[in-house]
Image (cartoon, rainbow, N blue to C red):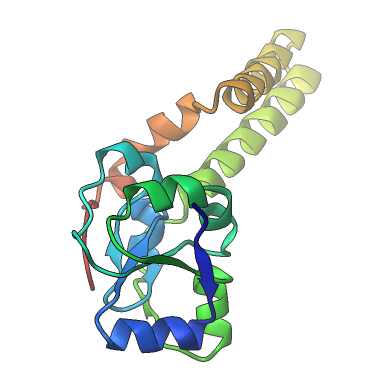
Length: 176
């Protein structure tokens, strides 16, 4: 089963008629910026979703890619008619429709991983050049960790960073 794409304007009309908007991005992304009224059901919890029964649902992510790639899985968890917001949150904003932002939220976990990993690699190279060649091992360790994360889909650095104090804000299912 495939899901039909809706333009932001078509999605807005269906929402006004009672459709439920489901944000499949992770809770930290939803907390940072969201479409008012969207419910947060992260894709990572897809198997544990308890979606509203027998209601029209419109799934969205940031750009539309995650919803397109996972359309079959999303259709399987929907008990009623289901659609995809074409272009996601980006298209919604481009259409001039309202979003709710919280600039007090930390940056996305994956950006934090990129900043941390890049900094550690650079630090390892600088210390290896200036202090002792053994510091090159730090860069190698981070590189192996990133390769492992890419192969397995599990990033230990992201897990560690998600436990950092600045990332310990509430998440979960929310509509706002």
